[in-house]
Length: 155
Ligand code: HEM
Image (cartoon, rainbow, N blue to C red; front, top):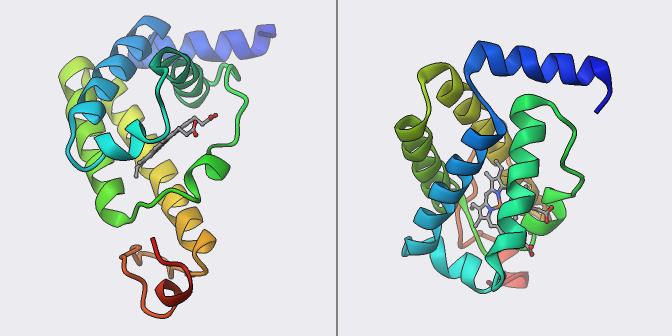
């Protein structure tokens, strides 16, 4: 990490209490819940058998998003666009994430994680919609089955 980036990360960490160790605790606890969840568990189980590499990627992702460390290099949109999910899955994901963040983090840290998660979830939901030829209007949510698009792109 260059000096400027490292200074910025330290500053955010000082302001919010977010550390790499906190990110690791949050991510591990969150995915324990995701895996046990009736709606989300099966979507992940279909695609992830070896969880440790996924968790390591998620530590790097949240380190980049929350601490601006630049540790994550990936393309989340490509991974999410083809998933068989809609607004209900994103809402459930956010609900579990929010519960976990509130439980483990002080308010400045929880607020930052939750705000970022909402923004990224909205953009991923837009990506899933576009992948299915559905163009969401601002504030509109993705509901399956789609009206016309569903005829040509069944789940
Ligand atoms: C409907 C809700 C979601 C579901 C069902 C879901 C599911 C998944 C699955 C199955 C993978 C593994 C993909 C693969 O390796 O083939 C994955 C990866 C990932 N997810 Fe999600 N996800 C959801 C929402 C989110 C949100 C809201 C975020 C960010 C705030 C996120 C961030 C990521 C990241 C960073 C990866 C790693 C991508 C990579 O670099 O390989 N996901 N997700």
